[in-house]
Image (cartoon, rainbow, N blue to C red; front, side, top):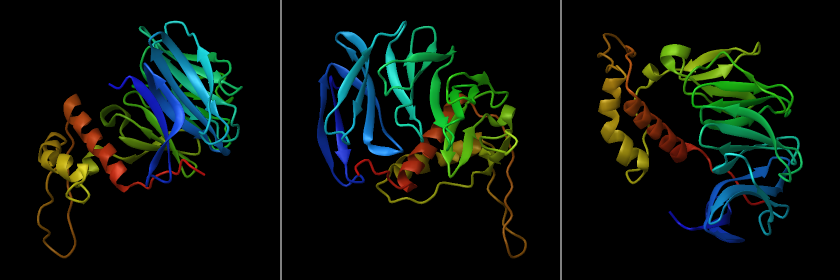
Length: 279
């Protein structure tokens, strides 16, 4: 692990240029920009010599940063999870402690933090609705929802395992545990419930990527094992024009699921467009 943290600016991933942000004995955990102002950039992390957590803020696209150190109870790490899509001053950060994890809200660009949620499970992510009023926060098992821009939260009945959240095109997408939640990926209905959009037994193979890509090198060799553990059968030869795809569901163990998730993450990196960081 490097003892120096550096933040880089990029022109859509073609080249990378280091900014003035360079700190020794530091681990940087996250960098995000405000959707309403791409010049507003936040970074979070922690020092381990001496131990401290901090939030950095830039108003010139990462050319310069202002530091805000925070001493939090039972704090070992600090990670920026989300910036409001309508208010560049409003951010949510996660702090990892020994016995619990904590979600903090700041409405003044990180100058002060207010504790809004405590979880005995690791907090994974936070997602704002497009209008900034609703916030979803997921842990490794459960999901929480706020209807007041992150001031208070309530536990949601679903999902009950393997939760994660993401907003795509105005729709909330979530992860679940297929054998309990009855979906691996779900989408929120207008009434607030989640409907299954995709399940593990619907996988039909690995999408093609170049021979030198991680998908080709890592995922293709283990696909037969993953397919077997998920109970996915090869479709029988069609008896008439068309295709016939069948699959049965079984319970894989944690390690097969972890391997599958790694493939899906790598697949996303292979196929998704890169997000611009620089104006």
